[in-house]
Length: 346
Image 1 (cartoon, one colour):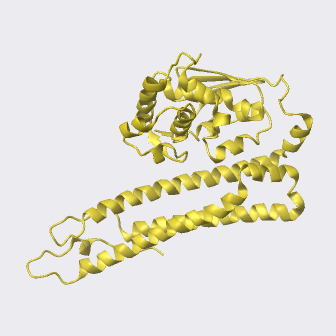
Image 2 (cartoon, rainbow, N blue to C red):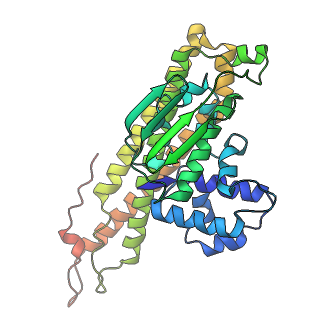
Image 3 (cartoon, rainbow, N blue to C red):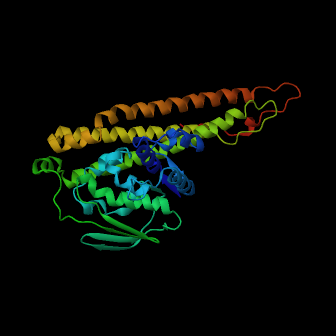
C-alpha cells in the first residue's frame, strides 16, 4: 500500500511557512526534497508513517499549539494549496454532503490502491463506513486524513465536519445549517451546473491519474536504464541487464502517445463547450481556478519532453545492440545481447 506525497508536501510546506529550518530534515531522509514535495509521488505506507513520526518528534507539539501538529496541518489544507489540481477541484463542490457522497473516491487521492469501503451507513448529515486501514497500524497518517476530511467543507466556506476513526470505522458528520461566508452575489457567480461540475471533475481526475501512472512508469524505466548503463560494456565480462529492452521503451512511448491523445480530446471537449456558448462567468471562473491556459500550455510540452527522452533512450539501446552483435575479438565471449529479443513495437 502507498500513501500520497500530498501528505509530505502539506506537512513540509506548513513547517516552511512557520519558519522552520528544514535543511537537516532533508539531509536525514533517503528521498530528495523534490520527491517529498511532489503531490503526484507516492511513498510506501510504512515509510510514510515513519517519516511523519520523525517530523512529529522534531516539530510536533509546541506550547503555542492547542492540538496535534498533524491535525493543525490537515485543518489548514484549504490555505496551504498543496494538493495540485485537487485543490481547485474541491472549490467547485456545491455543498458539504457532496464531499462525502463518495468517500472512497476522495481517499483514492491519498491511498493507493484505492481502498474498498464496506458497511456504509448514510444519514441526512452523516456517513460512516469500514475502511481496511486501522488507526492503530497507521496512527499518524489516519490522524492527518481525519483532519483533512474535517476540513473539506472549509473549501466552500462552510463549518468543519467532525470525523472519528475508531479501529477501521470512519464516521463523518457535517452541517448545512449555517450560512456560507460568501455573499449572495459571490454564491451566484460560483454556482455551477451539477452536470458541468461532474464533467470537469471526471476529466480532471482521469488526467491526473493518467499523468501519475505515466510518471511512475517513466521512473521505473529510468531506473532500469540507469542499471543497464552501469552494466555496459558487456564485452569486458559484464552480465546482461535483464532490465530494459527496446520493447519496453517502445511500450512506454506508446503510453505517452495515448496520454497525449487523451489530453487533446479533453481540450477539444472544452473548446466545443465554449463554442456552443457555454463559456458563462461560472465556466470562466472554473477554468481560472484550474489555471486552464497554463495546463494547455505546459501539458503538451511535458509530454513532448518525455517522448524526446524516451526516443533518446531508444537510440542509445539501438547503438548498444549494434555493438553487441558486431563480431567479437578473438578470445572474447559473444555479447549476451545476442540472445535478447529486441524487436520494437510500433
